[in-house]
Image (cartoon, rainbow, N blue to C red; front, side):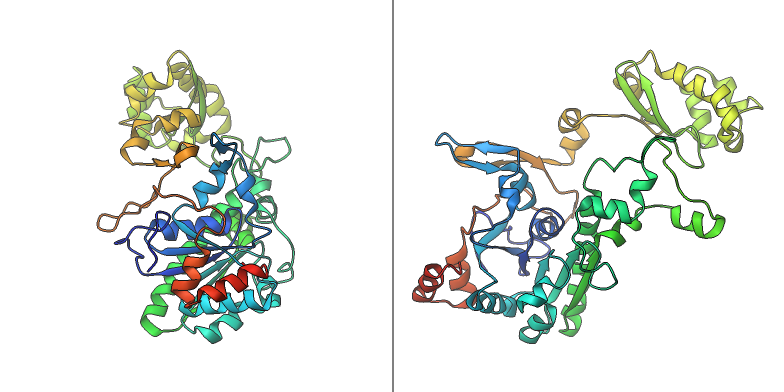
Length: 411
């Protein structure tokens, strides 16, 4: 279809799939970005006077002429085409219908009912394209008593149960230190979109993919639901401890902290050998997982041993001694992660040349496909950069029509 420096690469797994991206911030844009990395042609639709406000988010790349470009926006909108369109106008709605008639997927992340009120929701667009996969990401989904509530990532962490579980025992709960509500919804939206695409390919029938941030966060709470429904126990913050295995958590070392998960009998025995105390594996007080998990026994016998192994060694020394044999990892900050040889080997930091703005190093794609690899090293587009091209090639708009839409502020 469209060819430009900002489009996805030919030959990707989703090459030939056209996605309309009517989203902003992260939960929607990241979903469509994953599809772009995998080869889809993604058309980002923004209001001409009120675009995705992450274009103003830090950090910013700066050019010599004083202009800037958001690296935050770039990371979540790479590989896309950008058009501007005012969906509040009749012409804007018609243009979106024309685009939807030729698209395979539309992704939006407005509050439930917003697109319906504009006249371009799922029911309206499936009339012009019955095979359209319409993916809607929202705080609480398209149904239920909360459906019209505004929401952010923290809303999902709060109402999905995760916030109440995270933190230090005896202290107020602490939000997870990233936008896990947005990210969880993104991943489910991507999975749902791909499943619906498969169905549309077989049957010619599209469908609504309804993704709730609250639902998505709830699904991440591990065993909390069944622990409550079976045993009546409400999950509480555990800090760095695990609810039913020890040792498994954060331990201080000479230059920071490590994660150590030597709780199984096999890993405990190996750890005792690696750190020069093999006799501890057969100590009758701590020779089984159940014994080591006992709170009093763990605090009195196990924890001091582990701390003694670690406190005089650096993260690198501990990984050299044990990481190939037992679960032990240095707790690395982002600077260490960016320079990590495993991250480099997996191409998880990619560099893109933004011309006058310089080079941007950003997160690559964790999707490693042997035959149709993802292509994350792509540019994010300036606002509306491809409007005329998209309208001409996709909708068949004439130069006169494009000028008329530009003149009345629709694009």
